[in-house]
Length: 332
Image 1 (cartoon, rainbow, N blue to C red):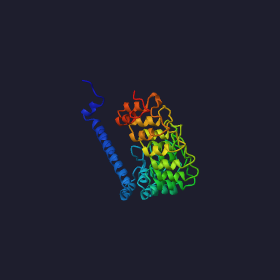
Image 2 (image 1 turned 90 degrees about the vertical axis):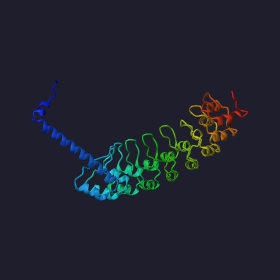
Image 3 (image 1 turned 135 degrees about the horizontal axis):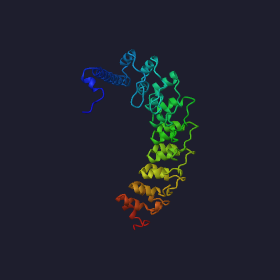
C-alpha cells in the first residue's frame, strides 16, 4: 500500500491532530472573514449608518472590496450617502482607491447621478473631475452617457472641467449623450461655445451618426440646427441617412432627406444606398418614402445588388411587392 506522507503520524496520534485542528481553525476564520465582508459591504450599500459605525469601532479592514474592486467609499458614493462618506474619512479610509477599471468614487457618483456625493468628493476631498479610468473616461463622460442632467450641470460649473475629453475610442461626452438619446444633456453641452459638435470617434462616427442610427429624433434636430455639423457626413462607415434607413427610423430619414445638403441616393463604404439599407431591413415606410423621391434610383445596383434583391433575400414580402409594382424596377 502506498504511504501518504505524514499520515502515519495522524494514525498513531502524534502531530496529525494538531495539524487538523489548525486547518479547521483557519477554515473557520476564513468563513467568518467572508461573512463579515459581505455584512460590511451590505451595511454600506444599504446605508445602515449604525451598523457601519459598529464595524468601524471593531476595526473593519478598510481594504475590503467587491469582486470588481469597489471599496466602501465607492459604494457610499453610488448611494449618495455623504454621512457614511464622512464616517469613512474620519476612520482613515483611502479615498484615492480605484476599482479594477481605475474608477474613482467620483466616477461612480457621476455614473449614478449622485450629485450630493459628487459635490462632497470634489469640495471636501479635492477629487479631480477630469480624472480618467483605464478606458479614458471621465466622470462627465459617464454622467452624459447616462443622461444625468443635474450631474452634468454640476461638473460643467467647474471652470477646469474638460467637456471635450475623449475616451480611448475618442468618444466625447457629447457623443455619448447623443448616442444614448439624452436630449436635455445634448442641449446643455451644445450651449457651451467650446464644444465640437461634429467630432469623430475612432470609427469616424459623429454624434449625428449615432443619433440618426438609433432614431433619436430630438437629438438629430438639435444637431442639424447647428452650422458646424455636417448633415451628410461621408467619413463614417455608415452615413447618418443610411444609419437611420437601415434601422427604419422614418421620422429621422424624413428630417435628413428634406435637407438640401443631404444626398438621398449616395452610397456608403459598402456601396449600398439608403434605399438598399431600408429594403434589406424590410422597412416598408422608409422604402416608400425614398422611392417616391426624384433623386432616388429605385433600381440602383449599389453593392452590386438592387434594393429588390436585398428585400427578396430577407424575405420582406411587403417591400418586394412595393418595388416590383414600379415601372422603374426590373423584377428579373
